[in-house]
Length: 372
Ligand SMILES: NC(=O)c1ccc[n+]([C@@H]2O[C@H](COP(=O)([O-])OP(=O)(O)OC[C@H]3O[C@@H](n4cnc5c(N)ncnc54)[C@H](O)[C@@H]3O)[C@@H](O)[C@H]2O)c1
Ligand SMILES: O=C(O)C(=O)C[C@@H](O)[C@H](O)[C@H](O)COP(=O)(O)O
Ligand SMILES: [Zn+2]
Image (tube, rainbow, N blue to C red; front, side, top):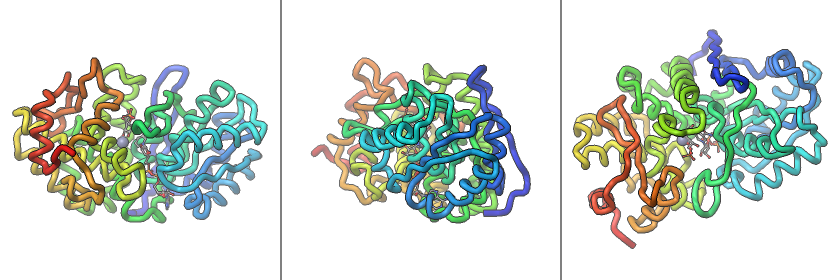
């Protein structure tokens, strides 16, 4: 990624739960001091995964130690499988084994999986402990580390058990993205495209002009813009009573595809979201809501950066019956009706009250999915 000498601070102004998101190159080396100065804590448990531990844990440890913070570690296997009941029990046990008190810190060093898991463990251990997000994937830096959604998956669906628990501080060191595999860079980029598509047509037009370059040269500016946009939505509607549901654009389809894959790595979250974005736009076209040119622009840009846009692009056998059953577990379902986030145009999304089941079945058939 292009080196970024600038530092950004974006505040999420949630009253007594307000916190800063610090973005910039090299911040992990300063994490200990930042945490000690701002949060005045001296004991912590760092939760991370095996891949991130090998790459970035030593730097965080050194910085915590230099600031006088004593830290134990809990290292989970990399991948979505760790966001499970067993993963939660293991993480809560690690907090208690480390004899952390309620005022001590949980630090999540990793991608969205580690952040969601460690954040949920922090929300429930000793009925709620402070936690710090140190996101190491693009997806976590632009999306999951901000906003306080924490949780795990169950066999019924994605994120079905969880809590809203805001971090006390987010430290996004953009230099750690240098070690991130291309596949996960693309996956994280899908959430940047999402935030642009749901409410900022100019932002999407800018990404579109950059084409595949948006994943590299354009990234530092896009990270800060995406975080600021998400922070604004979360500030307005912390617990998803209304507008925050727009952040679910592409996710009703996306989560159902991840569920159908059994949360294995044939499809990762950001890829499922990329596919879901293309589908949400085409569904909106099929319902007569959105101009077809907008759906075509979205699909073209997603393809340009290597994200899936058709069911056939993901190596998971899918059928309309099980996909619809998985979508019926979505947390936005109300009175038994699946509520999609739909669009009037690029930059103008809304929460639908429901899509007629016949129209949905016809759409899935047109997209190549037959009933089982
Ligand atoms: N809470 C929220 O608001 C929110 C928002 C979006 C997504 N999510 C959740 O986030 C999860 C996906 O997050 P993700 O895409 O970060 O996946 P992830 O946490 O599984 O990380 C992806 C892979 O990258 C590796 N990795 C992480 N940082 C690295 C680095 N710097 N260098 C090299 N490898 C690195 C990890 O070990 C893992 O193998 C999903 O569970 C999704 O549901 C939550
Ligand atoms: O922060 C939010 O709100 C989001 O919806 C962000 C999504 O990108 C993220 O994948 C989130 O975990 C989905 O939440 P869920 O409530 O649909 O499980
Ligand atoms: Zn997401």
